[in-house]
Length: 214
Figure: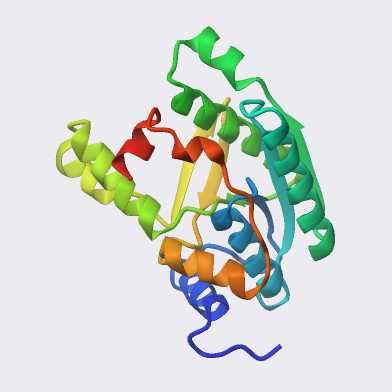
């Protein structure tokens, strides 16, 4: 398939190669919530998989926070993976119970549970790393959040193209191929490819700190 030089696919491909995010022969677990960012990520990586010589495995976690809406998200992601012919792992976890047990904010609990789930899928599938749909907007929001919380100049670093973190004794490698994309570019891509991602109603709430920063 011929792609325009400045197409979103070429932009992601160039970013991956410049930052050495993927090596030929690797398996990558793609975190897919059903929202625009992760849907765009899965769709683009699926289109680049042959060129990059990689295999993909999608992963979706139902946080059990939004009832029927969360269940509909899972069905949407399962259908998307099926259309793209990508195997998928879908699981449910009780984020509220985890929050109560560890005395965290809901935002913190959801993040910890989500990354624990990603680490488990990476291990089970024998993948080398996970890919998440963080964008340029997330990068800016992260810097602002760090500064507002008083992290000083260290917070200016924001999100990196690739990181590694310990999750229950396991080294989870995470990459962010969409870090140069704006939210507007993501939405334009989804519209152009008729992807119709899900809208998370919790993003409209003012309770999570990141939402207030937005």
